[in-house]
Image 1 (cartoon, rainbow, N blue to C red):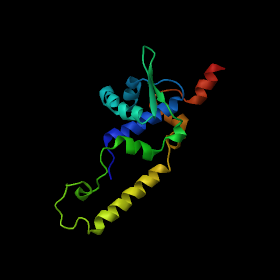
Image 2: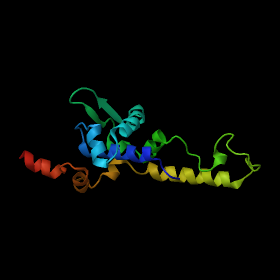
Image 3: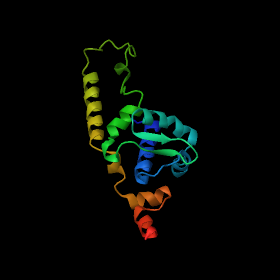
Image 4: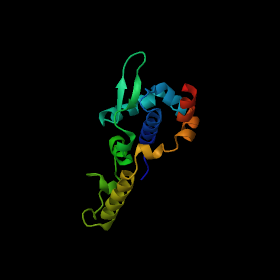
Length: 154
């Protein structure tokens, strides 16, 4: 199974927000960090809000931040919220195939089992797991790592 670009960047948006903690993140800065268009990220934002992963704050100093703790957002939940189709073959889709073996074919069962195994592995990982190395990630995303912010405030 190949995840869509939308799901890939949805996970990356959540990672960015997790790195920022309670601070608001602007879509423009996330777009810059990942070299994607703001318009594309705004499109992705809607399913993340609807799923309760992020909240938006309007206004001049607004932005987005995680609504749930990063530890509570599994990759499976994000994939299920952002992927439109889990069809691994055309026989997964209702009316999508004229194969005479539908209903009697072992391939369909094997693919369903493989899909469930894939989703179960994703259920074992959270956004927090993906941002465990905050120092290196902060540098790559273009903001100061948590340690340097702490030192700067002393």
